[in-house]
Length: 323
Image (tube, rainbow, N blue to C red; front, side, top):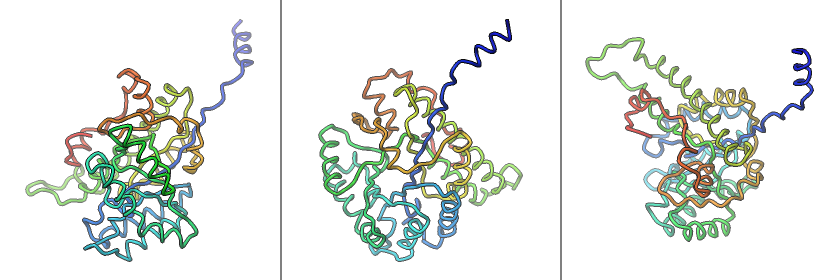
């Protein structure tokens, strides 16, 4: 009887493995902290990130804030050279506005001006490679507070040869990155060095837990996609050009591959019909496109439950109150 049941189970057709494809995107090029810090202070981190991108050898699109290329209103050749490094490593470059503008704060007209200002160096640079900027990423993922503004912006972007690059795997890597920088700061007066506050041990823990956190994010948005669409769409993952990702890039790639993900270009991801869905979200935040579509379908609050959050110890180290 047991043998017969086992044989019957074995004869049933096996479900195909989940389609796990993902496009990787990196925001705030050439480096998050520019122009507040000096070029020299971040070059080592930049080189580590470029080296990691070369080793990983997966498609990646980087989104440029041209304001980070300037100092005292003048483009800095060393920072423009950082963008050439991305191109030499095989990345594609897109527009992320000049000043990382918040559409909801500055309004549509100023936002459109900032988009055009954000291609003054980028477009000529890409022309030297026989390319043109074709992807646009909203800073803060804030895409408009009214249907009219969203439609007008879509027309403007189309006229200038851009497509919006959505994000489905949203996350708070910026908080982890802030904690990573603070781990290197001198200890407060009166605090004795210990294994607990040793910078290298603390940074190793941050990297380890950060990769686990990102894995939970991938799992969560896969479940959200299946719940909303009935399948796992090709995901679009957002990270930033910072020291944490320079030191974790290879581990992030390996973690995703261990979960069965195959890295693809943004073009391939966007061919999925789900990305033709209207973005009806006009709220104040910048959520994942999966959540925008779910909000447009008026899914109940319970649909959004279970999203992984940044642990309190990381928030405390970063000196940030909440996500």
